[in-house]
Image (cartoon, rainbow, N blue to C red):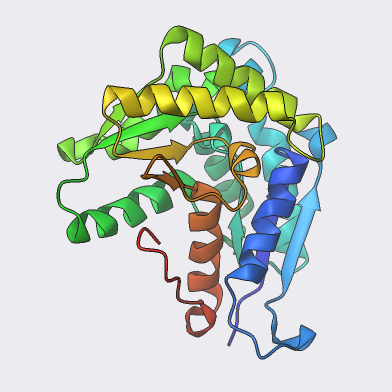
Length: 258
């Protein structure tokens, strides 16, 4: 039996499309439409407030309520395993409230935690490359401020998360919101992210975490910078959703870091 996949879209909209495509790209098929998994994408941006804005001002409505309403709709139409392509929305003040709403509503679908899945992947990679330790993070200001990634990656001193300089962080945040406004990432945004990533590499980063789901759009078809691997949590989430829905259809990847 193959489970149906649900995507919480709209956070941002192009990130939802990116996750959907990566699910299709990582599914084994025989070239027929009918071979693909059933995927429900609900993009409901107007009901989900900006996550960084909320984390900076907790008096505002929590985006968790809108995220839950999207998951509830996905559950109602049959989604059995759900993913949300937004790193900042996995911050504890948001994600924990979503989980509470789901428990109270007794939803039957399983909601994967993208950061936990990224940690799971990185620990598996570390078994192959034990020297992997310092991870550079590109993210929004919200993800930076609440330290979502260190919460998971630095437990048991498994990894160390390196942050950009204050100027680099500002450039990365600006680039993310520029990408949100365009179907194709502008060159200016790409250059800001590239420069910030190079700064992290100079600090000693052994891999770069693309810690906002708009950022992989700027590095499309690029797997490294100056030999340093790029880690795409959206791709990891896509593969995790396939693993939970139909593990026999998860396509092998030849690239050494996936």
